[in-house]
Length: 205
Image (tube, rainbow, N blue to C red; front, side, top):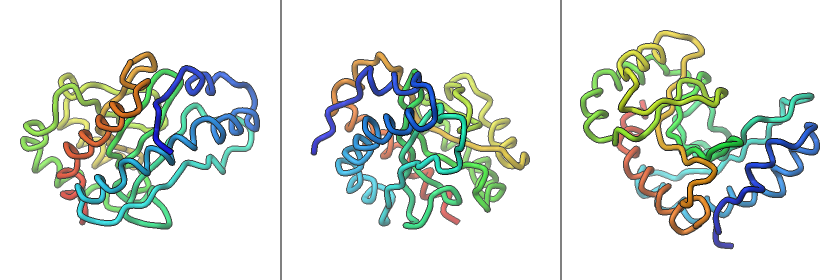
């Protein structure tokens, strides 16, 4: 089934009270769209990174009381999991959709990857558009544009802080017309993958 885009109801999911009620809405409204997106981008992703990639959809299994504030799908070269590997994410909060290349705190070679990125910082600045965003914590709804962030400082934090993270990509506000047009959004995701694929490949130690 072709991805037709996100709609207001998808974002309204995060206003639903109760863990079970919100999880049911996530499973019915949003997760099928993650699968549709995967079907349309997976071959381009695999070609861009040069290896098989596998879809993982967040299950939020550890939650027992508080409903999730966001949800996501992840793409990694490992079939069994993604958190300990560099991975791509497509997901949403109540106010935006994000497409990230993500390095989160479970990654075992964080400091080595950060050092590599610090060594290649000029290449990153010259190849990644300044309107891309960087997040330093995937659990916080907070990001800063590459134009305004101190990239060296961000990467040093990623390297030296145990829970430090580094996510780079783009965010689309909930009312962005791009999100309503499935075909246009899919092309945006493919473009982001092409832009960030060299960074991903560089981080595979």
